[in-house]
Image (cartoon, rainbow, N blue to C red):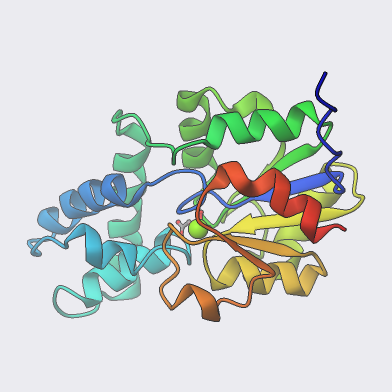
Amino acid sequence: MSAAPAAIPFSVVVFDLDGTLIDSARDMTRVLNRTLSRFARLSLTEEQVRGMVGDGSAALVRQAFAATGDALTEDALRTALADYLDAYFQDDEPPVLYPGVPETLAVLADSGVRLGLCTNKPERITRKLLDALGLSPLFGALAGGDTLPVKKPDGRHLSWVVEALGGGGAAMVGDNRNDVKAARAAGVPVVAMTYGYPRMPVQELGADILLDRIADLPDALRRLGA
Ligand SMILES: O=C(O)COP(=O)(O)O
Ligand SMILES: [Mg+2]
């Protein structure tokens, strides 16, 4: 008889969304290019968009326009952002999970860990994507980029999710500098997935542990909490 796996030494694990759970760059590129074309701008490649994800949708739209012509006025930017957000919300292309994500979330939940989500993506789009993936019931608390007056890299974005889950020892799992900074500010250890949209060499993110596969997360959390 094999021994039961060792417990996970955290009560709460909070995940980032884009570049950590879902590979959304292809979808964001498609939707963004539709908005750009409505404004008579040229398209961006997925590679370019991967370098613009992580600071929320307003920053994404702002960078997309700056990269394809004159920067927009604040008024035009608001119109372009609304266009992008409506199109993304209505988009019915199924979101793509990274390999091993549902299985790993299930392992953690089955071990009694409470799961949360802290993303700079707007909340209504985040909820829609999680619903489409059937993952919503796994997350006890969720904060999007527009849920609170602050967002990552502000540590209060992450702390809010931890508190909403009842507090206790928490860990963060993300893919870019905003996740690491928010975790440091909240006093929470952080694992970074190397396959996401880091926008810098992953070794320089400053994470406690770098992981290539999310299936290795339960063991990484055991090491982190040891
Ligand atoms: O910038 C975004 O829209 C979201 O990025 P995040 O899920 O990695 O926080
Ligand atoms: Mg991310």
